[in-house]
Length: 161
Image (cartoon, rainbow, N blue to C red):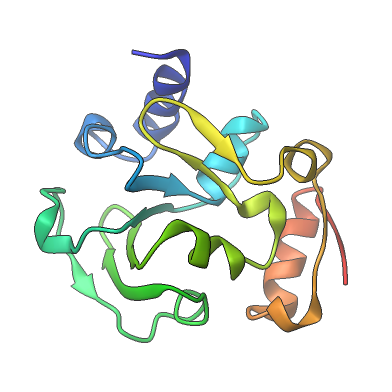
């Protein structure tokens, strides 16, 4: 067990009853991505859900929960490489089935959100963006617009467009 695993276990314990029910499924192909990982890396707290991205179909995973498919889930459907989105409303978990990591990360709007936990370690596409809480956004990638920008600005991030 790595220190990163222990940190993520305690973060998830605040959100769900059994963190190992998620952590035991993580690897290079199935990762927790985005806000939860970002706040964990920065040692901060804010309201967030759990976003699990995977190259496997939901039937191939044995994740506990009541999974409902959301074919038009706002935000995810505009990211290149997203094939399907499922939601466990009770535990506030989104399961996003993707084609591959490179394609998906190319469509993320904010560089500081391109971070993940693979069950062992944290990873970041742009560590400087994460640590400085700053990004420059190409206007074409602002798929969630003003509300998403304001959400991160309220958390202390700066976003230049």
